[in-house]
Amino acid sequence: MNIHRGDGGQEPSLNFNQPRFHTHEGCLKGITEGQAIILSAEGNFHGRTLGVISLSTEEESRKGFGPYLSRVGAETAAFLVEPIQGEAGVVVPPEDYLEKAQELCKQHNIQTGLGRTGKMCCYEHNPRVKPDIITLGKALSGGFYPISAVLTSHEVMGVIKPGEHGSTFGGNPLACAIGTAALDVIVDEKLTERAQRLGEVFRSALSTLKKDEKVGKWLTEVRGKGLLNAIVIDESKSTRGRGAWEVCLLMKERGVLAKPTHRNIIRLAPPLTIEEEDLLHAVQVIKESLEALDVVDNIDDPHASEKIGSMEA
Image (tube, rainbow, N blue to C red):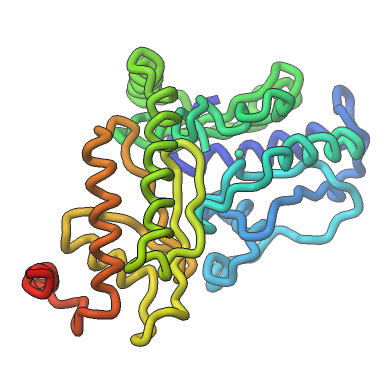
């Protein structure tokens, strides 16, 4: 199923799971109508539509929206999960996390894709994991056009009858053409394998910063898979109350853009086509920015990079 927006894949996945488990002809589990609940992990981010925001545990995401779906239900229908939590700061679960979650889902009948983590879909890092439903978005068009998709089996898809679900722009021919071309590029140019190799190079270089005499104190953790990575900043070491946001401003002054999240975490997700030389240059910029973090008086100063250079000279 093709949908014409980034978080559009999440809402249909919720829709599929409701009739799939309710008591009616063709259902896979007899859950009483109106009693099915869908679980998610703490710190999740699945989009900004009301259905998936109802699953959020972040006050920042929920404040000012609503009404939310009820969090009360008698029977569990599904578990919606990101294989790696990006918005939470590239939180990488233990290797067997998805496998064990899958086992629980089977007992009670009850996800970071398209090459970014070094596999076409992140769950493939564990060959024993096979999700019932996969949602895709963002990278599906290579960033050129809004598109998302829901991937599932005929068994699951079959619970939605003609006319029960629709989307104004679903199946948009231009979006589908662009999505197909983007997938061809990922496969033909071996971007998945490239992300795996460059990710190892990137994390290795970042890990050396933890051992550096000047900047090692700032870093408490380097984590990630493929080219989805993060560094965790130890704000307690700053004598000026500075953290990830200020590091990102200093990086910007030196030509590298990154996004802070949860105050002390910096997400690092370069394009899968990045050259190794540019990746290592980014590591050098991170090092220089950490060195300057408590040195520069006014980080918001547009000429901060010039001042940093003069200090080094």
